[in-house]
Image (cartoon, rainbow, N blue to C red; front, side):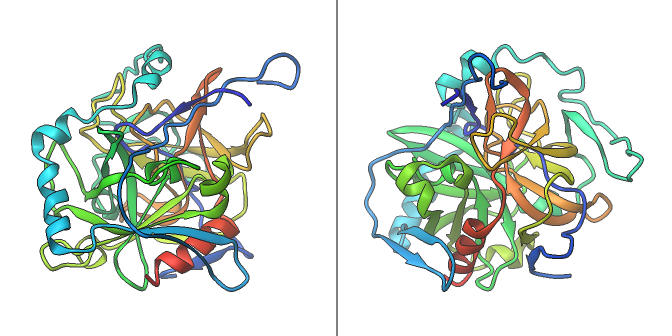
Length: 353
């Protein structure tokens, strides 16, 4: 195995295909080299001891899905919401072992500045250096931060609301939900539209959490995908409050991507929505079925949405992956799992929960 950089800590990352799913893609919602030593690959996997029923389910003809019920009662939901005080949210940090790697990332001249994206010849916003997203639109509402507890410590990830039958579905990285073969995350809460501590659409606690069987049993990085059905907030379903992005499975590889998130490690602070954009490429180390995108976003971006066919004027696109990891010898490329059968099975189960 190679070592990699975990991206759990503080904000969504960026990457997402910038073209609509081609023929053959299934969509839902509205229309180091081999010579020498390989780079290391490290993942931040939330793990904490907590109660809750778990089980394995499978959609007909699809891979199995492992799930956990959580915050089932009103009192438990109230406890989780009360746990995440503004002070705790502000102090939630990236996992320590990321610091030694991400700390040497070059400081971006555009960090913290408002940037107007330049258009590539294909009409897509192409950007390697993470820049603040200021155009609003649906992506500003549907993308948010995830707050969770790992072995008594508080951390952050990124995530997105997606269209679903239950109007309550959030998509993120698997390691932002379950520590691979280890324990599930606790105090899991999604804050859509997060900005500088503001929670304009409320906070949504988890009621059922889902990961792919290969992730739960083997910690298979190609299946680092998590989906969470959340409770209502203020009597409103998540989808009714902020809407949701479309999602697709089996989309063509190598397309352009546009990703969003809340990186929190230097030079970012996790308080602003940030994005990158560009073409995707297969994992050159051959260790995963993931695709990578050139992007300098840092820890905290894990779970952030990768959107294809992204329309900057509306902030809408189609979710085709989420931010997962970086290789230690290539700190400028972010990788995300390919949304194939595992993601499809997760969605089929979670959206009907």
